[in-house]
Image (tube, rainbow over the protein chains, first blue to last red):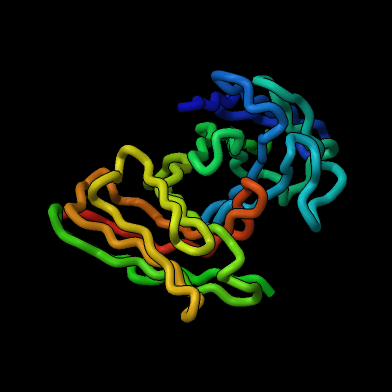
Amino acid sequence: EIVMTQSPATLSVSPGERATLSCRASQSVSSNLAWYQQKPGQAPRLLIYGASTRATGIPARFSGSGSGTEFTLTISSLQSEDFAVYYCQQYNNWPLYTFGQGTKLEIK
Amino acid sequence: QVQLVESGGGLVKPGGSLRLSCAASGFTFSDYYMSWIRQAPGKGLEWVSYISSSGSTIYYADSVKGRFTISRDNAKNSLYLQMNSLRAEDTAVYYCARSVAGTLLPWGQGTLVTVSS
């Protein structure tokens, strides 16, 4: 099983600032990496796939990078609606998907 | 628009059974692979099961193998998860999601399963 590890567990950032979230895979997943956003009481929403491609309707302030085992989700100029939990997910070993444990992005 | 709506959750005693359903609309259901994912209260996401578009290929997480059965009825645009021998650790919100090139898009709103005596 491919283990996904996200850091930090909680990130405190002020509105308008940049947030950088990390995700590490226990073995290479190539670029088969997605990021999801989950707000309280809601289902996860796909943000990024292929490590760096934004899903339809996702604002340009969200960007993804990385390949192999190290990945980053960057949110430039945080808006109030961006405070949520973010999960990375590998699909290199599809359909045996695995998720990271999540990073909670909170208002500083 | 593409929509997935789960139903069938509820309170069940340990050792009991429950059948979840996921009604799909807004897309050609028979063209897509589907998955179930769950989220225990206050915890992260755990993939549970996958079924191919025809239903001929199925996978399960080790944690549910032998107890859960995924199925689909393409004529009814519906996905199912039969859950038997339920345990307290199966308590979670269960989501269905469409698999698109490996990603999960979209997700349903989820249905809560509580296993407790």
